[in-house]
Length: 222
Image (cartoon, rainbow, N blue to C red; front, side):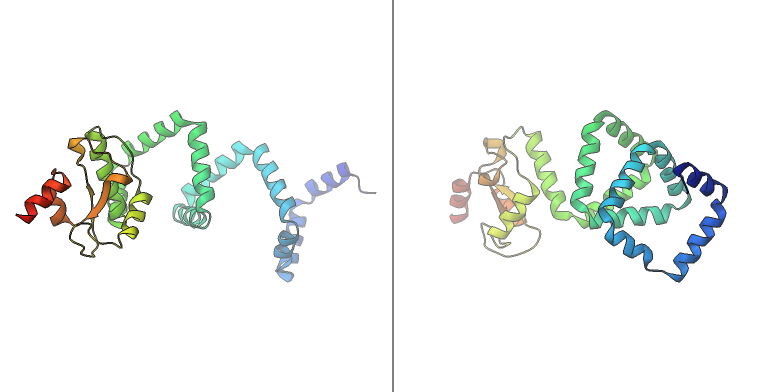
C-alpha cells in the first residue's frame, strides 16, 4: 500500500520521470487540462488562494523576476486583465490604497521622480484621449481656487450634455467642445454644482463672462 509518506518519497525520487510522463500524457490528451479546470473551478480557486497565502513572498519574488525578464508580455497580460475585470481592478486598487496609503503615496512619488519622461508622455496621451474629462477637471480646479462651494463630477457633466442634447444653453447651437458656464458666476457667490452649471459654446461663455444672466441678456438686447 502506498502511504502518503511513501508517495511523497516516490515523487521526490522520480520527479523528472513523472514530469516527462505528465507532459507526454498532456500531449496526447490536450483537452484534459481544460476539462479538469472546468469541472473543478471552485476547488482549484480555493487551492490556488491557499498556496498564494502560504507562499506570498516566493510568489512576489517570482512576479518581480518575470516582469524584468518579460516586460512587454507582462504589461500586455496586466493590461488585458484590467480591461476584462475593470471593476475588480478598481476595487483591488482601492483596497491596496486604503491598507497602505502612506506607502502607496511614497511609491508613486518615487516613480514620478525616477520616470519624468514616461510620466510626461503618459499624461499627454491621457489628456489627448480624454479632452472632455480634462476640461471638467480644469473647471473644478478653478472652482476650488476661487473657494466656491459645491462639487461637480465628470458623470454629472456628461448627463448635463445629454440633457441639453449637446447644445449651447444660450444660442442653441449643437456642437462638440461645449464649456461649463456658471449661471451665477463663481466670483459672485455661485456654486460649482449641477444647479448652477449649463453647457455653453466658447463665444457665448466669453461674452457672458462674469456677468449675471439677466444683466448679460439685457446688454445683448441693446
